[in-house]
Image (tube, rainbow, N blue to C red; front, side, top):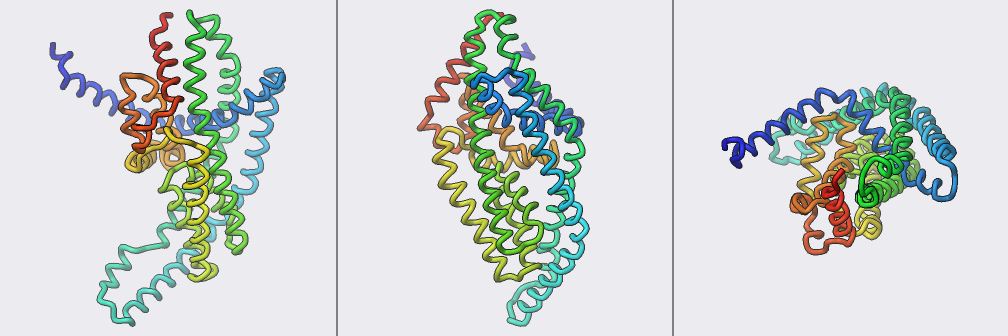
Length: 363
């Protein structure tokens, strides 16, 4: 009787949640490479399926996709690895120059006779700390590159398992057609989101890279990569990506040109994030601003900086899964931006019905 009461069920669920999260945080060193590998595999899955549909054998299609991934890993490692090391070495000089610029600004405020507590401002407003955070984040990203071989192996195994999964389901599960339909509908939703978001992020990162190169800002490749990665985080990601690049521009080219650098970030994110992406993405896959912020804090706390980068793809996967079942669809809607509460797409209906069939399938 006690175990069946609502309070007991809630306490049991909460305790289970706490234990699972504690285990995830303790296993961060294992989970981060696995989740990163899963993320790369999801991105590589549509090209793999496209090559198979063109009639290529599984082995040859896998070889081509893995070859492209390896080439990208090598290029990123060569370009970004050296840049991260150099930036970390130059970071103390940038911080010192930025501190001097900030001190000069406070002195001018005092000269204007503004009634402000300058000492309090100096304690609470430290732009150099933002550069330090960016340096630490890039350093941890560089450390992940040392696990490139492990990540690559995991990607190969995940893709190989995906290639044979359809055959396993056909032979191992009764009513396999319903199961395959449910899995296909769910994975297509996730793949669609990841593919579109990756394309938009690549476009954002490329524009930022060229814009910073035009202003001759140092380490423009790093800031373009950071803009690409953080673009997976709606709203907050563009701000986080812009801050270190603008601060470096202040140190290097002055406040006037740094304002134009910031304007480039603003225009890029407005055009790509608010004009192009909604037209391509469509409705029904949005997250509320509160959920975005909470997922950013939560996954960052559990998995570190890489968890922050993966926070929105992970949360979107959870949202799509919740919307796939009638009992939990309300949770998925609550996580959304509010538009889909009145304008549910046909994809949601198809997914719900397909996975409902999966839940009712008897093995």
